Amino acid sequence: MKILLDTNIFIWSIINQSAISPSAIQAFDDPKNKLFLSIASPWEMAIKSQSGKLILPESVKTLVPKQLSANGIKILPVRLEYISLIETLPAIHRDPFDRIIIATALTKNFAVMSSDEVFDEYNVSRIW
Image (tube, rainbow, N blue to C red; front, side, top):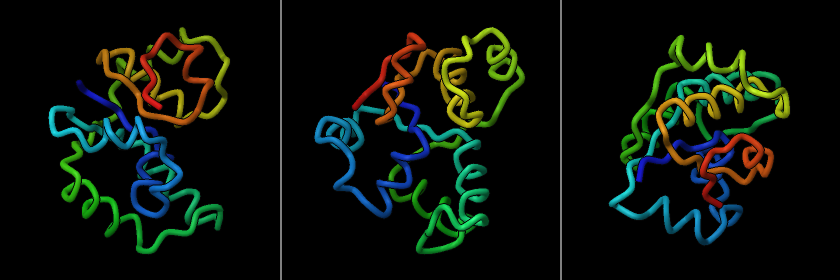
């Protein structure tokens, strides 16, 4: 299965694994699953880190590549086709980073690993 990680899952996998549900941990650790992270997630992390809303053990520049490599996670770019889909998505979720994650998952037919129940309103397969 191809799984796109929500930013919160990526962060929790680094600093608070106990916050992740057992079924999400199982899917995260299953070597048959391919894990992906939108480039929007490190962008969100950098913004929140700079504002003081997120405390990380290292800079985003150092931490993200290390965690991608350690967990076999592939980074996905933000593409115009994902952004274009956002225009047609219902405005249920207001977070722009989550909306690009949702649009990416819908376009690529990936499941999303997230604790955010609002994702369920978008016809994406959510792992939690």
